[in-house]
Amino acid sequence: MITSVCVRYFQLTSVEQHMKVAFSKVLRHTKKNPSNPKDKSTTIRYLKGSGPHHLGQKVTDDMYAEQSEDPENPLRCPIKLYDFYLFKCPQCAKGRNDTYYLTPEPVVVPNSPIWYSTQPIPSQQLEHMLTRISMVREIQEVIAMASTNVN
Image (cartoon, rainbow, N blue to C red; front, side, top):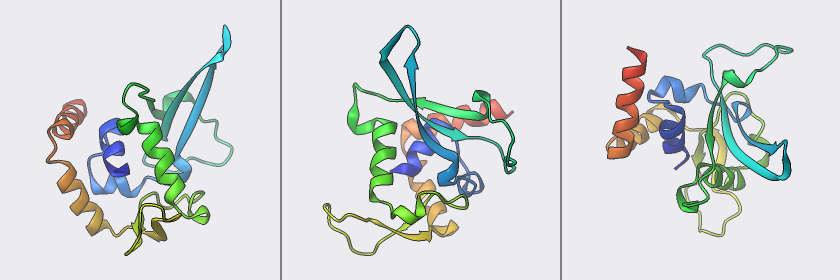
């Protein structure tokens, strides 16, 4: 679920790219409209870049990949999916800067408070998930666009 969000909206297509994602690099961002403070827009932001960002380095808007919410389709809204993933992750894992994808607990029910362990998902399992996700036509189009942009 959250893996497909990162493929679709942040164009992360390889296992190596996904293994560099961390909780500290993905965040929810809300902006107020300066002319109407009651008018807000929410996005999910991913801090791009292969290298670590240095302490004290000024982070600018162009360093992020960003995706807006989709109020018309709440079941596929990236913000809602992100919030739900965080809601089901253990609190102690949410600030980590070394992982984003956590290993699912072996047995959960829908109303379980936690669905994931604190252990990172193994790269082989992530590769398997990406292979399955890449079979979806919508994702195939994203992957094709990403490879066109690289070349």
